[in-house]
Image (cartoon, rainbow, N blue to C red; front, side, top):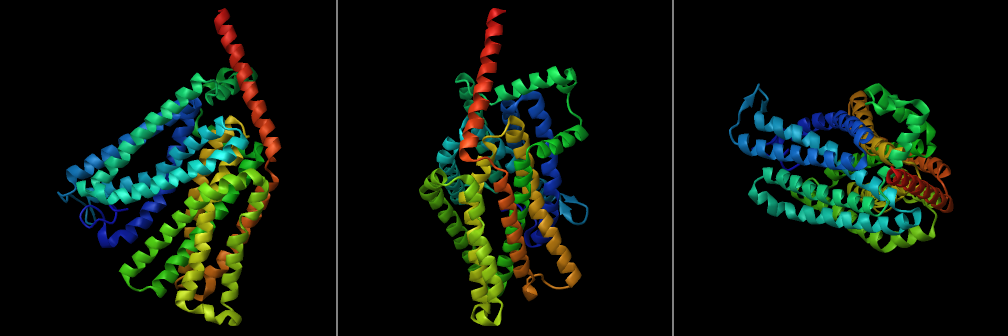
Length: 454
């Protein structure tokens, strides 16, 4: 974002208009990356897919950093509205917002393949907490890295991905050496496909076939379909709340510097509370309460906040209708949703995949992480933009966002209840994972024995 809003390299005061165009292109770019990942996973397996995609992203970021540093201050014009540096910054911004979900979802897929449900419930919150701390450290480090120039931020991101590549490869190597390599399950399923359908499945799948297989996967695994719609409704809710927060913040805090400081404190509070919950509350909560029950209970606070927002607009609660009161009410609702997302929802979503099969844990997870997340955000943004165009006024006026928050939060709760009804209990999940691991181990032992005999 620092590069995008830069007055020398990026778009400066005109960033808002170009930002909308960039975010519109993020979803198609994410889908292209997802399709490429699907082919790579089918041909090469999860380890090579992760290593190759991480190396590709690191190389692209390094290329952007070099290109911006070379042409940044020459102001080469491309037509009437763009410079060459702006074009490179714009493309790099779209790419950065497209690849992140693709990479981190693969890492969570690996963890979901080596842990049992009880182990995942015990350790996932610590993994998420350490990730939050790493994000905060990276944010603090930006002010020092930027001394080497704004392109240095892309260079630092590329170097961090190189470290990720080395550690990811090492993790898979350890899994292979100790007999819990996730690709063993993929190899077993590939052999079963060949026996049933012949050797045609060994060929590269065309685009249409990939999309068809994805649809069949979600039809075969109802929990994936339910999680897909839960993700869309939750991201839609966050988009509405974020829009409400921005609207109220402009009215209540007109000064730019004070507004920036307020926003920084708000997100700092969100990250702090999330980290606290991840380390102190979630390890105990996930062990004592079945995830099925947590899915039912999780939306209670955000839905209650939405109901209170609706009531606050009535005459009975007219004292809460002042700009600053309305701001804090919306901020608390958004804080509750985002804290719930970082500390609880993300962990529960990862637990959904643990007892599922290989295709669900890798391909199904990527479809939800890349497509459903983006579709929920961009879809609701399009709806809000359409309403603003049709009404001819800001959607924040007249209580429209308050009503949308209420109905979308109810839709999220319904989707959570639907998802909960399709999940295995903790004991059922433990048995499913145990059966899966023993089956893969037996198949690996048989294969090793045949190789030894030959």
